[in-house]
Image 1 (cartoon, rainbow, N blue to C red):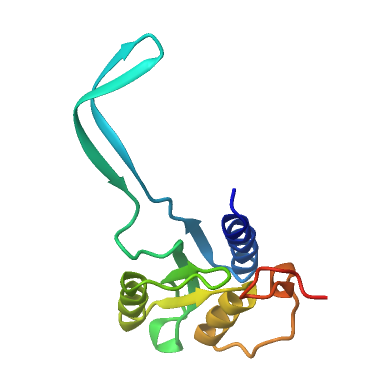
Image 2 (cartoon, helix red, strand yellow):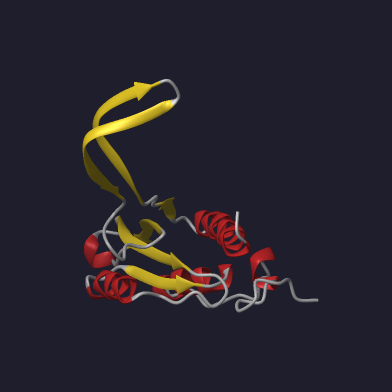
Length: 155
């Protein structure tokens, strides 16, 4: 596993834990490409005849974590709680956000959802708190001790 992949795994787990502690329910979105067709085996070799691709995941540019954040609505709405769609794009080091990812996050925000790019747990927590209207608290998370450009733990 590359250093960047390891850093993103660490960041993902930390963000999932922090968001869960705030009441959000986020899920990892796996993406990939596989092939299907007529499978033939010859000894240890496997061949796929009439192969066709299967793309997996949400959509091009879809966030790494999606889910909802429960929000108590105003008294005019009888104090019920609603689920607000939440999308968090995880980035480590100098990894750039793609145009498709930027567009996806913009569409979520325009529709009234919570969307952000998180290079540390603090970024995700700040976005959730900002949407929920809670004042930020000084908290330290293990992932926040990492330099967001190098992935190295600061002293």
